[in-house]
Image 1 (cartoon, rainbow, N blue to C red):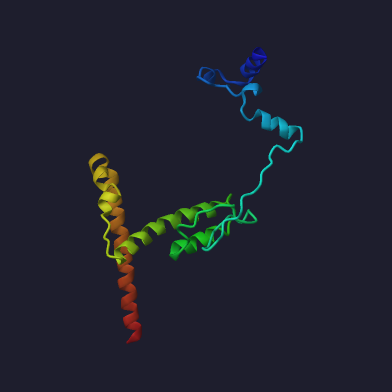
Image 2 (image 1 turned 60 degrees about the vertical axis):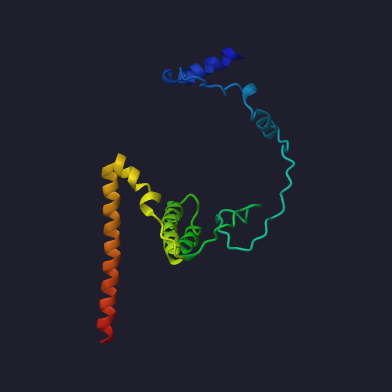
Length: 177
């Protein structure tokens, strides 16, 4: 049987990967840990006698894929969606998990949630040490170009936000006069 497997591998496998240690180790069905289950499935047997655990109670908003009919039996409730990041997450779950809009919106929601966390810390009287927490000192020491780019980006974004706020304030004063 080993020679049959080796011959099949020889015909399929490129010479460049044959010398990798462990290559083709799962080619032998007798050595495949999932083989008994695969055999049962192929024979039409029901291989699982699975009883679903009781459903966890929901006391917060849970976001789940629109491709699933309900919740999984157990899920996390430690940080329910809130604020702008929560709105972005709700929007993301309108899309299929195969959609880039779903994942890109979730990534954006994560970034917005970081800013919301910093604002919340400041509001509660804790001023985070962003230079240490973001690793800027180590980056300044070992990768100065990237550190300068990050600092410049932060200054530019902050300046843009401040200028928009000033512009809106001036427009409100002009309209009220």
